[in-house]
Length: 237
Image (cartoon, rainbow, N blue to C red; front, side):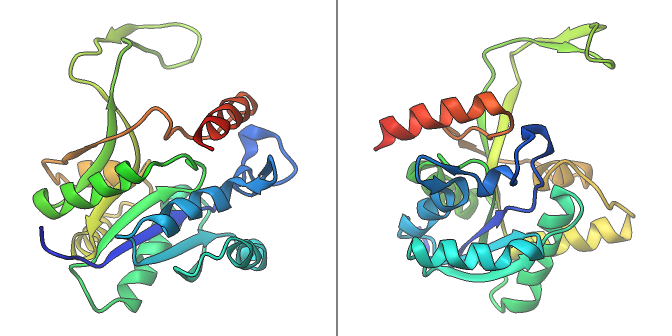
């Protein structure tokens, strides 16, 4: 496998409204360590990650710098201002890299800061699949059927689990591909998408290649998720 320059772009711009907490969930301290620092440590630890860039609201920039110092995250090379949505934050991060990086073949792993239990294997698989196939979307098989609903209280049908997978992050693309995606999105007037991989689908970029995910790589969204995180973090240690 050829060597590549690998960049982690960590999205930490969320406000955590669903958590109803005093601070955004990525900055919550749980058992003596913030969720964000746990996420950053995973990329700091991985030998194939060369640089980390983080997207957050400007008022949290000094806090992030302090966390990076506490955790000896010396791969953190830049902090980028977040946008009003997750997609806008991802776009800000990508556009920053587009201006800063001269290596269009660099591999960019776009990851949610609130998935702190990302494993070293997931990072490795994303890089390997992207280098081999041109992109990598972290995903898991679905073990449940899905109800179709428009109001959240009644169902109009279902989707069988066969052929469905649950997407996680990272979503991994060469910088050149992300550059082209941003250009096409602007030309087509696309200003919002659920994620980078859904944008790829909207732009007709196929196939998207799957990098095997992990149940531990879940997204902290609600209060009950903190209990799960605590338990898994304890087992990890």
